[in-house]
Length: 238
Image (cartoon, rainbow, N blue to C red; front, top):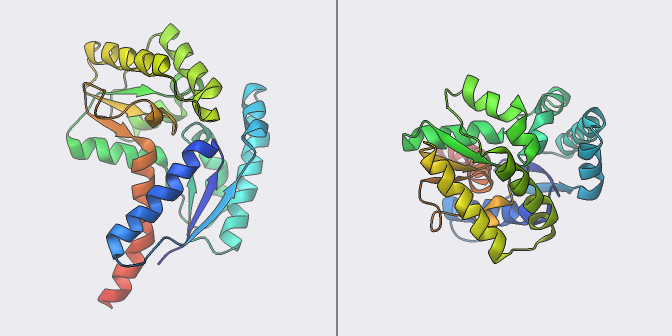
């Protein structure tokens, strides 16, 4: 089995889901008492959030790249960055390591194409929705026509993510607001919805969204599982 190196803590809430989902996926794939081989480095999200707010992206990139390199040196066969927003810094992380970097947007795009969807809506942090590192990748590399919420909805989503979800708070009022935003995105022509922040799945899922839902946490975790067990299957075949 290949070792997965996870850079987590952004937030701790979503990282806990990653850990549980990856282990459950390996158990399902291999059976018995199998669980994933994981190296997890969980950062202090308060420090990362401060860097985001102050625009210190280069500093944050160096921090995450250093962590990725340490995980590689400790035996990780691939790096998983357990957050959508910080994929803004994916190029710095990829440049620092020689092992594969499993990109969350690429895994999500593959799942969307497999479902036959082409016009995904995106609900995420303001950084992910407003900047081009994520939307641009979906558009240019994967040919997806991304639909974004309006400005006031983007502000509400961002506030709820940082003020509530990252702190483990799940509000029925915020859930209703998120459902309403997803409905407006469907009316605007979206044929599916990307839960583009690893915490948004705490409020939205296939049961309360009218269009197909792609939860990036679950998709990214599944991609990590596929990488982890791939070597086992190859060895068994040999």
